Image 1 (spheres, one colour):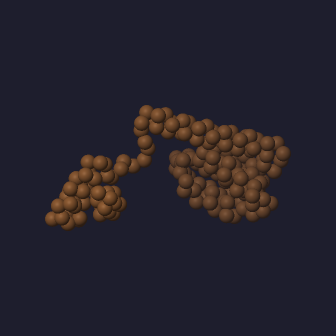
Image 2: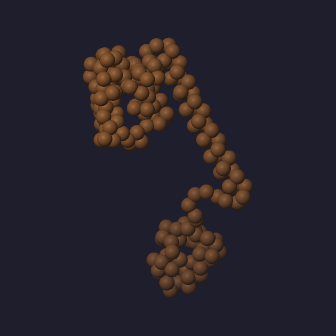
Image 3: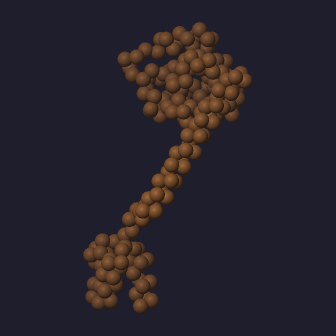
Length: 187
């Protein structure tokens, strides 16, 4: 069974062109959404994916109607392939039920994987460059040496409760017990 999916971005647009092309191709059932390409919430697409069974073919008028991004598109088509459901895009003449369509899809998947690897390499290079300049990522430490010494002096006095020391130093009890108490015991 051929299952069609049409999407328009705004309520001002009409899906007539897509609907006509999907019917002409022989789609028995057509699901639709009116949602921006970047929105994850697409009830029509979710319904179409749930409706599709092994041996069916999901048909779209154009690739950008299906996926929010190349990664989303590839994930969706891979999921369809795992379930034994074909995919066809009319404008790009891509049909995953043919060897040529599978080739095109695999090229897209390879390009997306290459892009992910480049992003990871750039991220790691940026982190290494920042560390070389003495910058460490992550959340700043709650306790520095000044705060530790101030808390130790207040605790040695024995007149101020730990809860008030926490307020004065600006940390939690757990932080005091984790950072200050071991140094007091060692001193």
